[in-house]
Length: 255
Length: 243
Image (cartoon, rainbow over the protein chains, first blue to last red):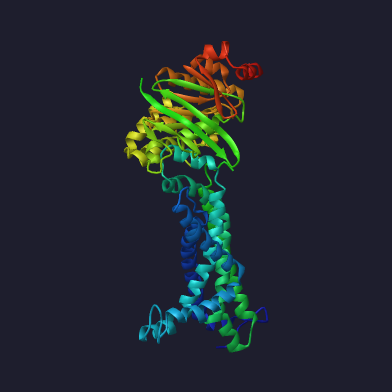
């Protein structure tokens, strides 16, 4: 292909040549982000509730304390207290081989394990690491959101005869969710950007594509500026979507 | 008369602080009982023990003969029989007035939605707020919110209504509208227990007045007995300070 120069220095032909690869990378980045947002939110809700679990009478009281509150607190502390990059490496090179291993995987072994690791190893590890990490952050958002709801709301609901679970579902979580939307949106944006770290274990997403292109041509402005603009567009889109949600669900909130 | 609530030797501690020091009393069907006393005397805590919002430290509370604080008691079922109205209304801000009222009947009792809505409309007529049926709580005045809260509690057709200082958070000009709804309820034969600083209301509407101080029931009697001829020095002092 003939070199195409934009503004005298930007080799647009390089981007065009790798257009399909960039497109696949973009799809992979979006796929990873969406999966991790969904799984991270579910995990975050579970962990957030576990951190708040309490009961009045034993043995439920002890169960809540030792089997729910303590482990979830340690979990959150670890995943917020160590670098995501290190977590990705740890999970990909240490944890995953423990479970998926041709020789003696605890979960899957043999030929299935070999092909799974070869084709989807980075994908599985990346999703796992990012989900576990964002779950820790999201659990804090849930915890704070739930705790921000006035106790009187819970008392009013319980005194009407609604069970604890129904009170959570109909009264507390809908109100907490409204307050959690801005931090959840921030978290989604962070997740989208952090997904670039998975390129380190060889998942072909946007950052990996840029690195490949940069390596092939020894040109850095073109690939990295291009993916920067793609990430920027995606985060702007996410921020806009969150704003729309806030406007839609903001009704009736007194604050 | 049917006994709705019976309280035997009820005590409540918050850490080293003893808030209730052995309360005995009972409320019969269609009775209106007002609990008065200085702030910090344990009135609200006492009321909140009656439907299990507070755990009792000792003694017991029986509602229709069922012990509220027993581990084996289905406290949700029991609470659906006990309406409670709070000082700060506690309407659900994310729901319309209609949804606030129909939530518990449909989810707890399984009343069909259409039927629950019909009943909600009737209750809103009763508290004079049918025109606010689709409003959100933050669009209502304090007095209106409290009247909706009363309608919400009534929607469960409770055997007794507990009022925890229902007018204390209201601007003075809105106190009357809430009290008049409560008076109508009393006249219709609703069993009520009211913690309040509204002495006029207690005198006008109550069958019985309980005076509480420092976690004990100091004195009880008809409004005339307690307000006009208090037997205890503490009651006299309190009445002199508020009247």
